[in-house]
Length: 469
Image (cartoon, rainbow, N blue to C red; front, side, top):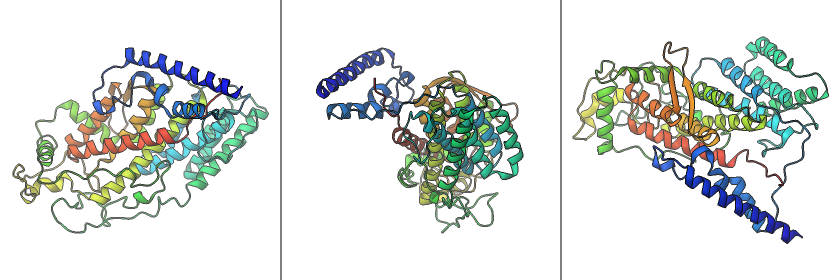
């Protein structure tokens, strides 16, 4: 009987593979970047034949061991509106601050929401695995209590506002045991995630003093604090999903004597100076928007815009939000490990010293960047790393082509419209070069780093639990 059952499973899987390959052959469209064509196909179709769930099921079936079954749940499947509501509340609660701590806050919030909801539905492997739920507990109440608990712990000064938002959200759920059980689960998930992030290396702050003034060595820039380069300690922050901050360290930067360096040098000299006549208005707009808008702000908005058109099941969206924000946080950790390993100078330092790089194709020039240079080394780009990570997760979840807008109160009057998510990372790359604060190679390396982190976390964390068909 077991042999026959396994053969039936194998036959079903082979049929799925055959039908899906046929569909993919008809559906795959050309991509702007060939290096991702092998990994991504239209509407995520390839995940059916190459994702971890399929691979695990094939191995399990062929070995005679049936896939682990998802526990039965009598909880009704609910849509994701509450998850999206509290995602927006979280972004607003965090407010304006340097972009790297918010990624840690958002990952903690969204993992608490996921852990609470998933402990009820059991659709995915847990993050902590320490939370249990009463059968029939409300997933929506769990999500509310989880997000509220983490945010209030991180931002106690906003406790009264958060308490009112919690009460308003819970008022939409009928009173009863399911609601009470959901609240309990959410509170437990919040407490567990806060405990998980206690003493995680995010404090106290550390600073970097330049080791010397050699060519290519990073030097302090206008706006730096007396201590020197900021976020020197960020590589020490405990990652959410990768193994270590050095796991996906960027490849070494171009040599000063290379043609790549000369190309990058002359590009930023031409378009990145505050008085450049070669920066068109549309590039000035992307510079100003992405100087004002941190990655967590823009891409959590993108997630909400896309998800709000779909009404997916609550655990599905909770998982995507958790993985996306985990990837963002860990890309930033990795990026700072790479930055302080290579310690490369910024254009504002490099261009006036063009006669010191032993490159015949660079000429020293006075240079004032269009926007203020951040106070840490240049390679790889932080915004590029973060955007690469979140793009990888969102594209795998929802596909490449979606209609979204980007805006921020710090860049009034600028609203960017996109139908291709990859155009966003192209604009981010231009924003940092036309802004005069990065070389193009900084951006390219950041995108690759972020993509690698996002792909790893999406493939290895919060994986789906197979169901018996």
